[in-house]
Image (cartoon, rainbow, N blue to C red; front, top):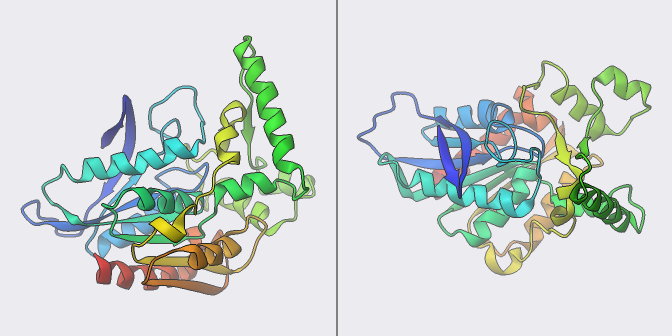
Length: 304
């Protein structure tokens, strides 16, 4: 199905419970994909399908300007646009007679987890918030190569490219990952998250036509100034279930999970550390996703 974000068509898959009866009402969950991912990957085919099997209507969508959703130019990764997608997803859900508007939750994976938190802080229609390997994308963008001036160097490059495009130059589309695990090895890439991301996105493990991990350089400025968890100490009051892998990687989801846990105002909050599993194991690996769902399903059952 599609729903609207202003004049854009947002592509979505709706996962429905077994034995779905349109005359009944169901709790619903909006499920958001990682940075550079798409609805056919972990947010939909893994978590969306599993939650639907437990009685939820799950809406997994492609971000505006990405995947099968509308918007030109392509591959814009802008936090403001991404968060508005969530609000519009709820706007769509509340028009469906079989969705109980009092029982809508949100789930986000990786960068989608950070966006889910931001969305829940300013849209009270979300009654429960779940995250898996959540990353504060702004924090990640500012750190870059961990040098003190990484963010300034990034912003300088964005400014130069945006000026060039305003004068007629073509776009620069960055790809976060090598073309294959073999190329990653040839390039000397050894970081756990980079290696496992490449194995996920560039092999049959998780590869999908729209999961391209690309970003338009000239439009990356807003992400550098973004904080997914600001001001969680004031506005995030909904019940919160955080899931992180117990094997930390360089993308920082382990520490972001604990940062979110400590910053959230939520009185009912929990963080599950899935021991022995990494950020990307929680995307696809049955043992890891099963343990995540063992926490998420009772959480949503209780609060939705």
